[in-house]
Image (cartoon, rainbow, N blue to C red):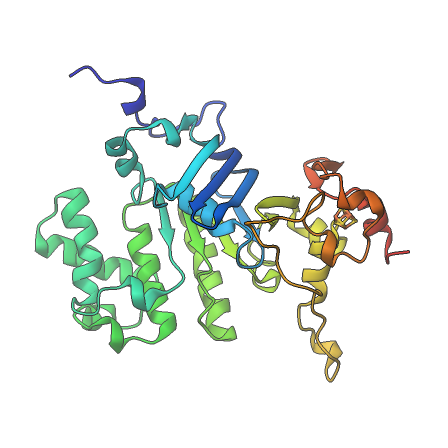
Length: 345
Ligand code: SF4
């Protein structure tokens, strides 16, 4: 049968003029009985080889739904993608046939999920689960695949990998289980890795170790890494750039150092002020007032206006575009200059 252009996979190797991965004006809705949930409302971002993009926001901000759309794992319906593109090396993944898409998913673009315990199968050994990737996708024999599984466990620094390859998931700590998930996600040498809250369930020391591991793996392989998190504190040392999401939109995007030095959106500023600091011992932690928006009924104008200390009258009626602050830096705030300058009037 003649192949249609929708069956043509993105080329291996060089990128030409294309970014590695580009999400462009993506919209995702969920058609529910209660109404249309507008989860993603015009999100655009790119990630290049060896680059780390941190996507930051509270739960319900649309960051994980965008990632699931990239992976092609949304339940459709109820999810609908009415608009937008997800281009991997120039090919729009949304136009691929399901067969072609499944060859990208997990092999060229892979994902680490937040809950390792429920993502791993409790009745199979970790070695069996890692080696399955090689048996199914690379056609390896059981013996060779298990050997590769041990190599990968070594690579993600699981001590005594050879002895532990036949252990079950419950015999590992939370941090070690997350390493196993990372091993499975990088087994097929993906070009893009999406890590969705990979350290949420872990204590602070283990969080730092997992972040360091992801950064090391990325350096070795030059993967593009999309790191999804609600915690600005964990990405400072690993991200190159940050996209902050609120109400399904990107409200600020900037190189990581700009964001930490001087946020240009009141929401980003609130997130930064909520990070606990050792020099503020004994003081109450700052919290952004109010609740995240209801995606069934987003506030008019700027979705952040009910919680914003910088709000002016036009914020209630006019949706702020993503203003260029400088270079590649953008802020979806009418008053970004005042935010950069300091406290609200
Ligand atoms: Fe606040 Fe207005 Fe800026 Fe929205 S547009 S973040 S409400 S100042």
